[in-house]
Figure (cartoon, helix red, strand yellow):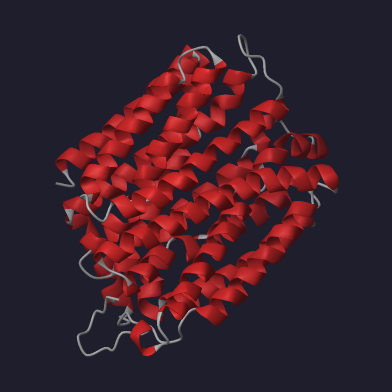
Length: 400
């Protein structure tokens, strides 16, 4: 097994342990944490109508329980990158995951909607301690052909986490109470922190750096056109995905579909296509350039959005599946591409990608809505296809 190291005199951590079993525990612990964190992110999405009724707020206001988390992730992710370059990946991930359980539990006790937003914002400030650092951690131990499948597996776990949060939260809330999902996922998050503390090696492969050097290393990535291109790609692909799925209920509850809210919520199961895609793409990336795979993924995603324009439910479902396949083809490749092309300060590079990724999501949750008001679903689809086209252009010109 090949292990990355920033210093030639450092002995590989995994080779000092007993074969493949420690490596398997590392991957399992990181994937388990990914499921917990992404479930926390989407906990409120299926219960937004309940929150509107409970707190007496409009649907758009209730949606802030998602938007505020995404915005916090976008703003703070970069800080965790250079922090992990200074303190080490494991301490940052374990501490952030353990602390994340606190505001998650507090959400269950929120007395007002404003308090709930504050606790959700705190969740968003802590989530990147795992999401923005995990891929860099994998990059410390794996290289080349080995890194792609590991990143693909982690992305698949993040997809499973999003699906778990969306579906599990709705079921738990309907069976028990709307506050119960926060208790359940808070406990899961705490268990994930313990699992990482016990499973991840204590010795850190990466050479820790001073704060000044970490800052310099992180911002030097903007001089690397390949990284800039991948940052743009990440922002564009999540813009399109979040835009489509955020405004999809408006499309499907209106004529000619007129579906119920329950039926529309079940459509989130198309995300299963993302789990399979992430696993497969991680392996395909061994024999293909990351730039080419990302370009194919962007093209597939654009085709999927275009297919949703056909006003027949089977075509809409097909388009959503194709969109998920394209989106996760990109997302299971781009983080590894960033890690491979970063010249040092890989934690900073990974966190910058995460920041751009979620900044794209914050725009995608707003701009297509204005297009919807003016041009209907065609406006949403057109806006998202334009974003994917921008990502494809960045790949062709900057990532070459």
